[in-house]
Image 1 (tube, each protein chain N blue to C red):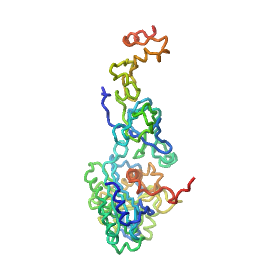
Image 2: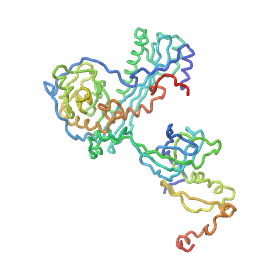
Image 3: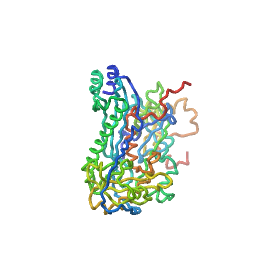
Image 4: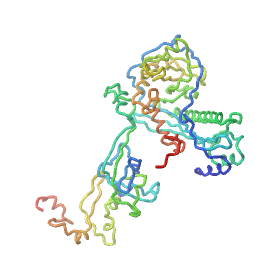
Length: 196
Length: 327
């Protein structure tokens, strides 16, 4: 089992161009061709002090792009003499990129809110997920009120997700009507899902 | 120490400049009259290359770049800053290129004997390698720039040679090394059984008359007989011409490369198969490079790698040097 509490090496790097700039709300990063990243994965940017100015950004992947250094589709045709089979036989595979777009979930510090730094990208750990989804306030408080509700599964990640019991019991949760929320006995709900 | 030395240089009296001479990234083409000695045939002939020759399972491609820029003038003596780099990228079973070795140098080139003592002291304190241009070559700025270009090019060739020899020494038993340019610059590379030089500029011609016509009007997919180049070659190699793309409708040199390999009978035996392998390397196309008809994609890939790592201030400005009009 992968230990998701320990930071792994960087899996990508934020890039920005005039056409695809980094903003406070969205950024783009590239990864190697072989990557666990996919739509919905949560990533962390920065936090290493190298090119990030100490800023840490959490984001969720919303889109992905792949392209090569091919200048024009016609050049692929010319290089293969018009034969798709020959195109696949070329001795060298062109340089390719996996470029991802992510929406910002959280920035630390929250103020001033600035464009995402052009820094390294890491797959989020369990701790990062807690910070990204703002669960840390009730997960690590003096009297934790976190209630586990399931797993966040995306991009090869399975991180526990919690709700705040104070929130559930408070006036902000007054619209949670007609539901039974299990704090324990989850297997009961699994075995008899239609009963509730 | 960064670029702090630049401030000292300008304080010492050098006037700041920012000029990348035309053709700076590339190598100057040399017009030479050379000669050739027949090896495979007494009279230069042409042969079809082996079709669909597979080539080696593993191949490493090596190339180098030079970027230089006039960063100042002391009087009329130009002060040139240069960046040289070379890299080797290996292609394995997955057909992808990965860097396995690289080297780089930063140079300052000027006529040290003609600059003021303060400017010279600032250059010496820069921490960069200094290359002196003889004073008699630097009396006129134009001549000084040509001398600087030559000095930078020689340094790059030396860098490529040393890296190439290092890579050649570490080649796996089934691995080949393809070098952009002359193999004959290095005794080690010229004598290596699995090293090739691919020359895409044809400043030097080795034939005349009917043989020259035969060489330069090769049809696509054919090679010339193997010959031994004379003239500039420092170390003995065998060579042949190979046409990658049809020249008709373009130019005599379109799609024409010259290959250098070890001066050994095995080179002659394998020439058609080796040429067939290199002919397959024409795909993928090395576009958008304008030399794509003669530039093998893996070599272009090495260039792109090196270009991406070149200090930005030394790359030619993409647009006009005129100030932009205010909006």
